[in-house]
Length: 106
Image 1 (cartoon, rainbow, N blue to C red):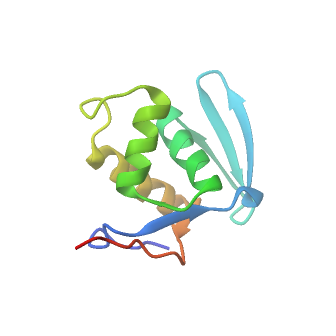
Image 2: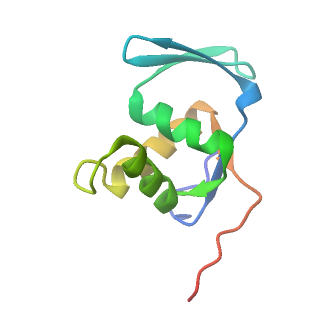
């Protein structure tokens, strides 16, 4: 499950078929069908999960999409916060490393 903090270029994905989602006020209940557990997600965790349902992304791309989608700047949503959110979603079993590989220009 855990890709580990040293794998910062990990491309993440999520399977929407494994989640039953119900909004609740300013949060979302997400039932994970594989584990049988229900989790309460805040807006940031839900936004990251929702992004990964559609497209496998690495942490930097997730941060960029979240900032645009929620109209945040880098101070409101630093990369460290996105990485922490990714780690929490990974531990809960909602996301996993993708088979896709991030290519760099280096």
